[in-house]
Image (cartoon, rainbow, N blue to C red):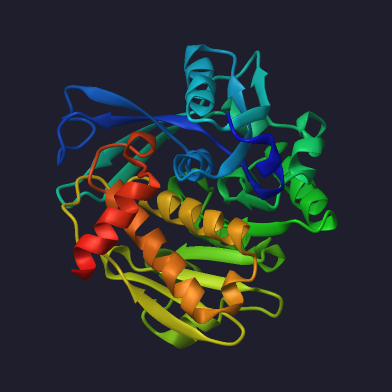
Length: 328
């Protein structure tokens, strides 16, 4: 288990954890798939596992169905050394499921089973506020904003973290099939935009949120606001771009043999948050930031070389190896 003295460096991740069913053959539609592999998923949970895999300290807050899948997922958190004191079970709702098709290029298509699933039913009264207040960083996505009561729980958790002086990290993780409409998604995602200290978006998400070209810096900068410490745009295998109050730039990615992009963004975020807990002035020092982003890019790249998110999360040695191989 995590070292108790590192509790001050704990990252608390809030939101959904579910089971992804991934076809055992890539490049076929869900209808054509003859078999599926069960993979634990859900971005906030992936981030929590990415952190412990890199030697950091993390906790997960969310709700599961009191069913076999729910208990399996909580066991996976525990096996990965993630603090599960913020987890609760629902007697009446099931653990969420998603069927994920990998298209020929390793990109994904989703079909969700959540009507409503247990994670959507987390109530404010079920939040482990004590755990949240121990965090150095509170991390969340946008799926927990889609419906009540989870949205209110999300807002209350965020408010408690902010009042306790905890840094807020937001990765919207746009999943359009879950929102009533693209407009509702855009509005929901932006409704908490200006609360975060750190925001990570993918180039596709920039295109969706700004309805403009993600390559165009004007569009990216329309997402900036006073008070944001660090905005990161991930550009897939090309690497990432970073924006702070005083400097901006880009960091090259790594080319690897991509099998499945699931969890790559979460591996990236987990790695970056680990670096920030070790040195909270990271975003004020461009050299240090570039180093942390190179490491995060390596983590994201390694994650794409294997199916599923959590099993594919790299440890520190694997990321360092990729970096030294690429620089030679």
